[in-house]
Length: 249
Image (cartoon, rainbow, N blue to C red; front, top):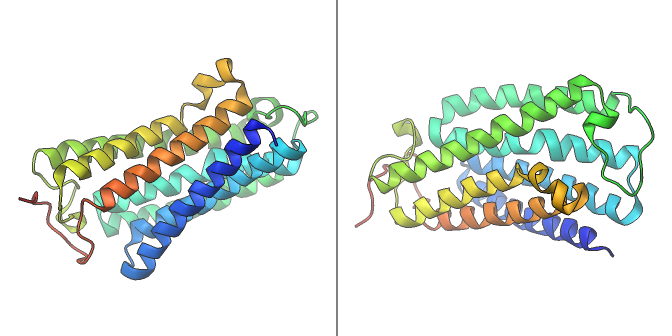
């Protein structure tokens, strides 16, 4: 087992634990943002397992297509969907869900059927710029950058709002009853940092190598996101569907 394989396996385990936690909360409370996060973590597990398999057995067209689809395009948008539900409320969340279902199906179909140019080096992480035409690469850029920005800005904005004693959402329908403003702000900050880390693999590829950079940022990003979720979850009450944002005393 290589170090990259171990990193990918650890990422899959943490994403699975994260997803099971959010799924358990959704089954008990039926809050849509928790279902969106559960789906996102399921997609992260597939991406991490694809990376794990490729690092241990060599890259192939199958592992590359799976990793590119679930690791570079589809997973972060579903994580961002949870932010939309939390900040903008159920109506905006349902509209975003319909659009995301179309985007996910279209993106998966494009990547899984697009021709791969050149041969896949089994020992090096393939890149979309080397093996795909423009459309899959555009979908990857849109599917990673825009949702990561939504998560980062939304979490940072919520942290700022809750520290001021205001509703950490755009509408009262998306309000939350805050048990600890400081914990909720810290959780949102960790979520923002985790989203930034997941988008930073390219910044480290020159120093660590593409494979190591992706494996490292996936593990660290998922871990920080999970920590942020746990902290934020302990900062709010979970019994009511529509809640105020008055800070606890």
